[in-house]
Each structure stands twice: as structure tokens, then as C-alpha cells.
Amino acid sequence: MFHHHTLPLMRSVQLVLITAAVMAAVAIAGADKATMDRGAKVYKGYCSTCHQANGQGLSTIYPPLAKSDWLKNTPKEKVIEAVVYGLKGPITVNGKKYNGVMNPLPSNYKDEDIAAVITYVYNSWGNPGTVVTVADVQKVKAARGKKK
Ligand code: HEC
Image 1 (cartoon, protein in one colour):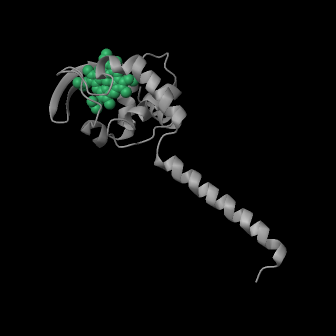
Image 2: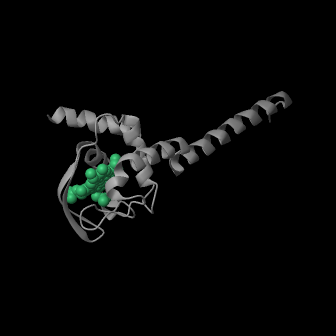
Image 3: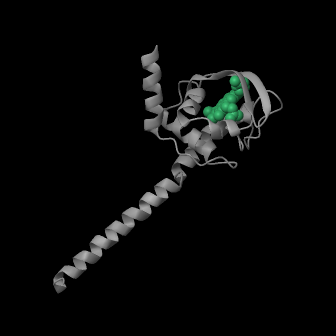
């Protein structure tokens, strides 16, 4: 059905398709290492003061991020908003009530830091493994800008 000289071409097309499929699967499977490393740095340098080293939270003041059902049941746009613009008022996390204030993230943190730290939290401590991109962060900021 094919001429002999077209076979090598078919093979390389096949190889390219397989490579693309594998890369797509890896991208879907989770966060890349560079993002996780960057996120871990931001987490240790900032978030861990309150939420603690392994996201376990602290007493009735700082809610846990580890296996947080709030994190699991909240759309990622709202999670981004909470981290960037702060969160206050009553919330329930894993059956415990909190009514505190999380301040907005200091503005020296770049969109890359925000995407990385939320991705890091989502991919640590039994959380659902969602990936947050810089584009996701910028979309939330743009939407928020329009509301004002
Ligand atoms: C100065 C303390 C403080 C820091 C720093 C802080 N948070 Fe929070 N965070 C809080 C408090 C307090 C609440 C609960 C707010 C409320 O009661 O409405 C909260 C709530 C949350 C929630 C929702 C509830 C939950 O446990 O799932 C998430 C998600 C969250 N923080 C993520 C982060 C991330 C990511 C960072 C770092 C970029 C961070 N926080 C830094 C104090 C802090």
C-alpha cells in the first residue's frame, strides 16, 4: 500500500505523535519540578509562618492546607483570589470553624510566585493536584480590576 521510501517518514511521524502524547500526559499529570521548587520556596518563606511547615495549620487561628476540604471544594479562581487579595470572615475547614483574617499577599511576589505557591499547595499533603498557571493568576487579577 505504501512505497518503501515513505516508510521511514511514517515512522518519524509516528514517533513525533507518540512524543507529543507523552508530553501532554505529563503536563496533565501535575506540576513540573521547577514550579514545585519555586512554590516550596515561597511557601517556606511566607505561608508556613501561619499554615506551618506541612500545611497542618495552627490551633483555632490558622486553618490547615493539608487535605483541606475548603481547598478541594473551592474553584481555583477563588483560591487565587484568597491568596492574592486576602480572606476574612467565617470559614469551615475540615469540620473546624475559623473566623480570622488573611492579609493580601505582599506585592513584591510576582505572578509566577503566586502560580507556583498555589500549585505547590495543591500538589502537597494529600491535596487534589490542581495546576495553577500564570495565565490563571492574570485572569483573576484582570477580572478583579474590572470590578473596581
Ligand atoms: C499571617 C498569617 C497567614 C499567612 C502568611 C498566610 N495565611 Fe492563609 N490563611 C490565614 C488565615 C487566618 C486564614 C483564615 C481566614 C478566615 O478565617 O477567613 C487563611 C486561609 C487560607 C486558605 C483557605 C482555608 C484553608 O485552610 O484551606 C488558604 C487556601 C490559604 N490561607 C492559603 C495560603 C497561602 C498559599 C499562603 C502563602 C502564599 C498563605 N495562606 C499565607 C493566615 C495566613
